[in-house]
Image (cartoon, rainbow, N blue to C red):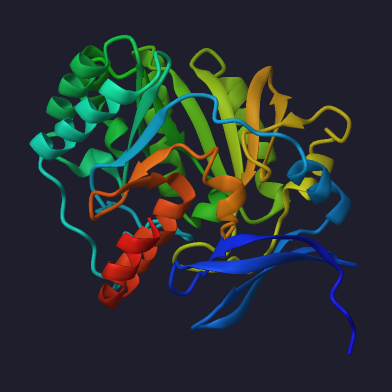
Length: 343
């Protein structure tokens, strides 16, 4: 029997039940793999990188949590069906109901009281713009946060309404984290053009944009760079996230961060990201995060440096852990108790 070439041992969340499990990295000829050894589900494995040396270099660097950040889901509903949904918003899985505005604002007050001076808040979903009381939440949250940053993660469909963008700006939103994928990825030219319309409205009202794209093929990068150049006045940062087997569907094509760096010809000019699974480069004169969300989450490495996240049972936990626990809660109601104990 061939002996495993173990690179490092750690603790990971089982992707089937979100419980802490012993785990180890194995280096193979075709890359680095993470294996979780769940007591209930046995060994589950994920290829983390196609370039093992690149992975080792990233993994062995020191990482610190840069500031106190809260990612707060204000709804799990959504108005579009994405190819890969990380929050299972449009699946048969039962979605948690929306928290009331009063509950959300109480959570924000608690976060603000304990956060650092440069902490910030991200309102996420699902799709947060489907809430009819969004402007009230934005205005009230900004009153609580004061000078701290408040942003909104959105697919942009509601931003086609110029009055909606104007209201967000007037109520104190600092920027939008706008997801605009390639036409081929979206499989819809109409949807792509609707998101470009949202960008035009952001330009009109000088709303800063952090432009994000998920890719499952390297050919989908180039159109993002053209878009960033065209809207460079309002786009201040980019994220390119490679699709991973996380959420509703596993990607047919697998792309890894090392391959993305080579495609961008940034072999010698990428820098440390905020986690071992991120790198940073400069594209179109903008800071650009190249990232991948692992499906098997190395909590020993990620928990200490992740932003805060409030899962659907109101537990505050680390971001990646929280996303995985929420996924489990939606996929199987029997895991509610397990979700609380692992968070």
